[in-house]
Amino acid sequence: MRTPDAAGAPPGEPLYLTTPLFYVNAEPHLGHFYVTLVGDVLARFWRARGRRVFTLTGTDEHGDKIAQAAAAAGVPPQAHADRVSALFRSTWEEAGLRYDHFIRTTDAYHVRFVQRILTQVHAQGDIYFGSYRGLYCYGCERFYQERELVDGVCPDHRVAPTEIAEENYFFRMGAYQARLRETLEARPDLIVPDGYRREVLALLREPIGDLCISRPKNRLAWGIEVPFDDRYVTYVWFDALLNYVSALEHRGLPELWPAAQHLIGKDILKAHAIFWPTMLMAAGLPLYRRLCVHGHWQMQTGKMSKSLGNVVRPLAMKARYGMDAFRYYLLRDMAFGQDAEFSEAALVTRLNADLANGLGNLASRVLAMQQRYFAGALQPRAPEPADEALAAAFALARREVEAHIAELAFHRALEALWRALDQANKYVVETAPFTLAKDPARRPRVGAILHELCEALRVTSQLLEPFMPETAARIVTLLGLPAARLGELDLAWGKAFPAGHHTAAPEPLFPRVDAVPE
Ligand code: MSP
Image (tube, rainbow, N blue to C red; front, top):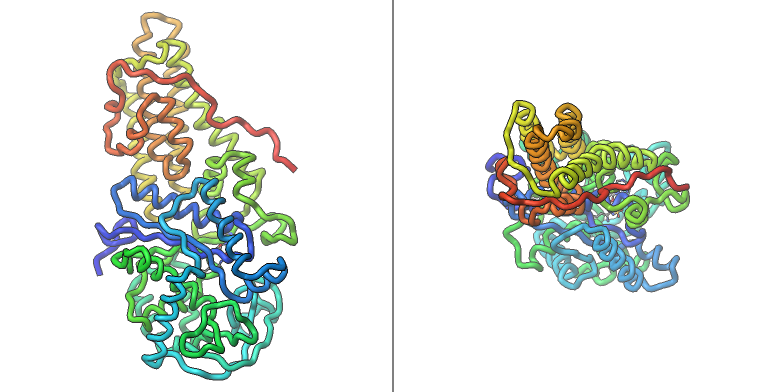
């Protein structure tokens, strides 16, 4: 295999980015939003650098959890799934999150695909019938081994699992354990950050056993029928994981497998790092390119849950602070891979300090001086050492942003860009164009300083685009540049603005927020 480049794939290979499929028992919240946001950022970033990218998201609609949620809502499971799946799509639309395909596990093509794989794996002897007794957590939709429980309860849902004894179909997962371990040892970049790969290797030191992949219809009828036994439906994880391949077949893009980079939260690591690779091995398909695992957003009041009334809704955040401020906060305050605490007070602090004061203030000062002194007309450059230092700071920021995104360190990328913005604000103070402007003889220098600052804002908008697309577009528009300039990453500093160019009058980019609403 060729060595992956900065995008985590061999040079020239397209990027196929996937989010998990969201269970339709809950409406879109912060957790769903975050992982989809990361996909959106990566897609925008790599596309701007000429990479072919395809992104997939969707909804996971079968299984006990969904059947129970539909029953509680008093509607048939399909109707319930239709409503919530549509809600995910409209929410992403309103939130400005883009994707290339939205899959639902109830889509007919997916159902057929799952049945085909089951038939194939059964025919080759990797699925057998047996009886089973085990401890099942409905929240996780999986059986637990005694040693995985903490004080007798599921560590994620903190409820005691239900003991279930029944006859079922089993996938010979254990038969692939050694091969999986060897693969993980040979490919240190298969699961990132590395701590999660080590966690999986630790799980693989104990026998993983086989995987129960059916549910008797008399207990659960809401699922994909097992093609060789109509008394059973397919276990929801065996069904859902196959979406990453069924969607490509449906879209006529089989060449994108195995370019997949799966973005997932740490709670579904085992399913993606053990169930899924062994399923792929049994199906005769190559392993995905990379698994990118993020931590969880914790609330100050504990885990986010409906009963605690602390669920963060993306569109409520948009209404309160603007989508880009919400995006910035999430990407700036979570180190990908680690947990982070969500707090609106911290969001407001970031908004006021980094966005309103840091970036917003710079843009409005520069554009206001452009208007006041030159009626918006951009003046010629006359580089002095301070100007060159400013250009160098932004060139460095670009290299740093690119290196950090390659490592999924979004927070570091933004930190690097803000170092350059701080330097730009210092440059304004040190070169003091507002003082120089009082002396008519220094007007050309004032114009040159403002030209440098317009370049700084242009480069900022380019580097910011994946993170804050609306803001980036607003900045280029205020600079009076066509949107296309946003994509011209290699445009040299000093070459962006044609002679006779005019910038627009300033508009506040981020209104300050004074208090956190109750
Ligand atoms: N349906 C499965 C995934 C199947 S993939 C073939 C599932 N769905 S989920 O809706 O429960 O969760 C989807 C994603 O949201 C997971 O990656 C999970 O980690 C993420 N989050 C849910 N709550 C979260 C936080 N509080 N913080 C960050 N992400 C979390 O699991």
